[in-house]
Image (cartoon, rainbow, N blue to C red; front, side, top):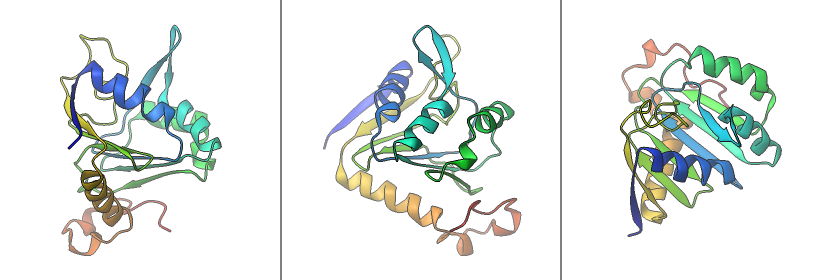
Length: 176
């Protein structure tokens, strides 16, 4: 099985710069927390949401499955980039989501500890980032398993039996 161990800055470089930023068809992100996430662009740092906006225009379908209320920094960037206008960008919230994964073009998968935050997946300095680990793989077995779980949650299949339904603030935003 093709599995590569990653930690700290390697996660940012492999998953974000060489993965997310170069996706061609789809990006599915599962995370507990969603916060402002900056990436390097030349000598500057920009919001990953600007990259998402450009990818959406290239017909890349982006889904973020999360459990918490996004941070104010994320929401400001979200409004500034006008991602709510993009048909290829969707977010849904489920209080039970705690797994962290990034599925790229249904052929590359990252499973690990980092949330969708600057200190987790973003371009923080060495002394400002969280200590994170994870694995990158092209294993179709693992990809199919994570994709199946993601879809079951995304499509609301888990809602009736989760036991938290009455506590959902906005159960599965943007339902189909």
